[in-house]
Amino acid sequence: MPRPPAKAQAITNALAARIIEGELAPDSWLPSERRLAAEFDADRSTVRRAVRMLADQGLVVLHPGSGTQVRATGPVRRSAADITRQVGRWRGFHVSAQRSGREPFTRTTVAEVAADALLARWLAVPVGTTVLRRARVQGVAGEPPVQTATTWVIMDVVAQVPVLRQIDTGPGGIYSRLEELGYRVWFEESVTCRLPRPDEQDTLRIGADQPVLTLWRRGYDQDERILEVTHRVVVGDRHELIYRYGQGPA
Image (cartoon, rainbow, N blue to C red; front, top):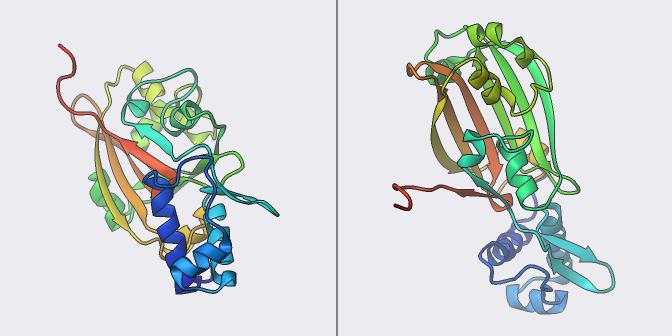
């Protein structure tokens, strides 16, 4: 993906921040090109390019001849509980997207791969160990992808759950299949932020200066054995992560 002009990217980032933080409310209209050009000391062609990039990110809707409107639906909101329990046929991203009133999609590829040094460390296996990789691109219909999510599963688990080699692993996916076998799966997750790599820019349809969240999640069984590891790369302004802490209501 070509690197956008720095001025256009800066305007895009500034407007995206206003949308995400609620300064520009859902269904409201962006200021005119003339006003934005004056505010950011830019020519109108630069402003026009910045607004198109906002549309590519799924934050605004272009109405030729009328203006640009903030999209009514905000980022997909994901709760930790979306992973730990099945809702209907789904867990995880699909539950979060459907809760926001949108239609989710997932594109999946499955292959056996050898663990490199980084993956071997996360899975606690020797470098070169064969594992099953399930790579997914996920988003909501009519908008750019929200995230990539790649899961690596140790092979003795795959032997117990051969459906993991298929694209469709059945209602609730891998964690429901493990629960059916008596596993009590628990998770730990590490979250960081960085700029996207070129391949991630192409897949997620974002610019080089648009930050992404990177999440590594380990799934353990009741004996604290690592069963699988998932790595997610999430477009920050398309996804909101929600965590709950404490003991809850008495």
